[in-house]
Length: 190
Image (cartoon, rainbow, N blue to C red; front, side):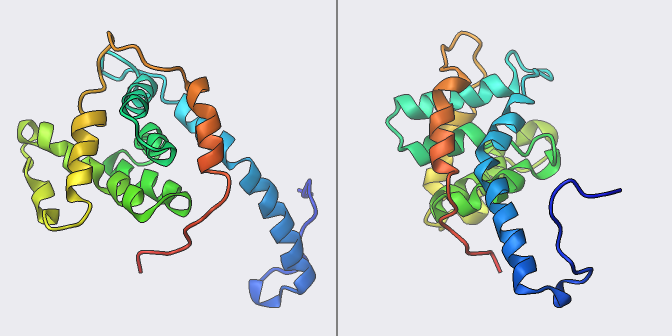
C-alpha cells in the first residue's frame, strides 16, 4: 500500500531527522485545525435515545443551553455540551475520556469537573444500581467539589426533558470552534 501523503524516511523514531519531524509537524497542524469538526461529528453520532425520552445529543444540547442561559462562560458551556462525548468509546469511564479530549483546551477546573461528573452524577441513581450514591464524598474537600455538584444538579441530571426548548447544535458550533482552536494546557496528571 502506497501512502497518499508525504511520509517520513524512518522506521524507528530514534532515526528521525529534522526534516522528518518538520514534515510531521506540518501534517499535525492540519489535523489540529480540523479537530473541532471531528469533535462535533462525534457529538452528532449521539443522536439516539437508548432508553431516554430524548437522544444523548439532545441531552447535551439541553444541558449546554441551560448553562448558556445561566450565564456560564463560553468554555464552561462547551464543556457542558461535550461532557458525554466519551459515551460511545468508553461507556464505563466516559467522563475520563471526555475530560482527556478537552484537557489541552480548558482550565484545570473544567477538566476536573468533566472528569469527575460521572461519579458525582451517580448521586441521583447509584442507589438504584447497588452502588454508593455518596461516592462523590471522597472529594468533599477538593476545591472543585461544589462546582461539580452544581454542574450535575444544574445542567446534567435535569437535562432529559423533551418539553425543554434547547438551542440547536449550530448555535454552539462557533463556541466549540473557538474553545478547541488551540491547546492552552499541556500539563498531565503524572
